[in-house]
Structures are given as C-alpha cells and as structure tokens.
Length: 245
Image (tube, rainbow, N blue to C red; front, side, top):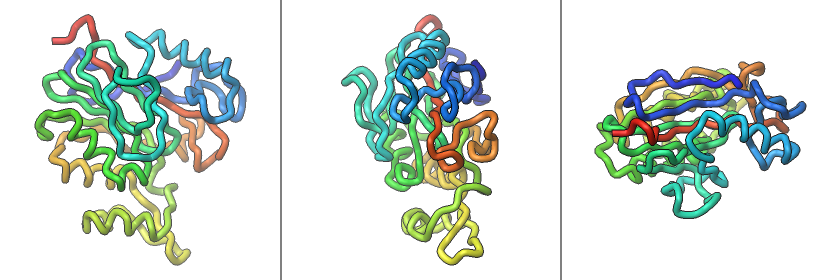
C-alpha cells in the first residue's frame, strides 16, 4: 500500500497519512485501493482495502457520511455521523475523510492535544468547513498547524461564475484564485489558494502541503472529475496512544 506521509512540523506523537489509489484489491474503474463504500465498488473489495489500511492504524477510522457541509463532529459521539469534519482529543481515535478531487485538510495544535480532519470541496469550503473545524478544536488559532492533502489542481478545476461569486462575496482577495477562461462565465480555480485565504482569516498561519493534482496524476490518485465512476482516497490523523504527552 502506497501512502503519503505529510511533511509538516507536527509533534512526534501526532500521526497521519493520506492513501493513494495503489495497493488494494478493487478492480477497474475503482482500481485498486478504493476506500469509499458509496461509489459502486464491491463491498467485499472495500472491506479488504479498509482492512489493509487498518493494519497501519491504532483503531478503525471514524468514517463520516460526507455531504459537502460545514458540520464538524467530535469522534465517538455517534457512529458514522453525517458531517464533513471530525476532531478528537482522545489518543488512538482516528479522524478520517474521503476524497477524489476535494481538498482534505488535517489539523493539530502545537502541543499535540487535539487533531482534526476536514473534507473541503468548493461547497464545504465556501460554507466555512475549515473555519468551523478551527472553532471546534477550542485552541488558539495561532497554535494550529494544518496540512493540505492532494486535491484537483488549478489547471484542471474549471468552475462557473456562481463558484467564484460565492468566494469573492466573502473575501475580495479570493478573486486572485480564479483565472478566466475563453468560455464566458468559466474560470480555473485554485482550491489550495482559496483554502489558504480561509485559514488565514480564521487566524491559522501555519499551513503546509498543497500542490499535488488528483486530476493530472492518474496513476497515483482517484479523480471524480476525470473519471466519474472512481474510488476514494483517505486522509487520516490521530494521536498515538503509546507516546502522547
């Protein structure tokens, strides 16, 4: 199983990773490490893939029913909650989000006492899912570190006027994240730039990661916009129960 280990200055006992599409048992078009149980893949294949992932984790991830909202939940309150972000202060609990173009963002505080994961498609991003996650962590925003996982890149993410307007209406500087296209009313959007603006306004200055493109790196990542029927990667974070402070 091929994973990405975030390069960021999190405390040593904060563990995290993002899966790629490599190393599972699913067949095309979900080949091969599909972790999404809602995309038409054989349930037995998804279960086998999740079992492979589970070998690298201290517990079963707290899977969410993601709906492009700004709802944040604390893990352990209810199974399989409808939300797009989760946080925990409990060592050994694993926050997880599934993506295939949307932006996964991992969070922790400098002291390593709370961690979170957020699923930020453009709707969730515009609705404030990152700001809601920062608020739910209940630490000073300036003490929060973030890492942005792989998402659709700025050369592939074409959107309409309504998307641009949703962001610019809230933050004027968001206009810089959109490049006009020859087709009237169409723009190329930089979701990483948009996320940085939102985090900056929330008081979070320590932002890492970003830059990978799920759409253009077909051998490594799933992309819903590229393929339609496809799998999902997971971005996960937890406090190591063996070494937490």
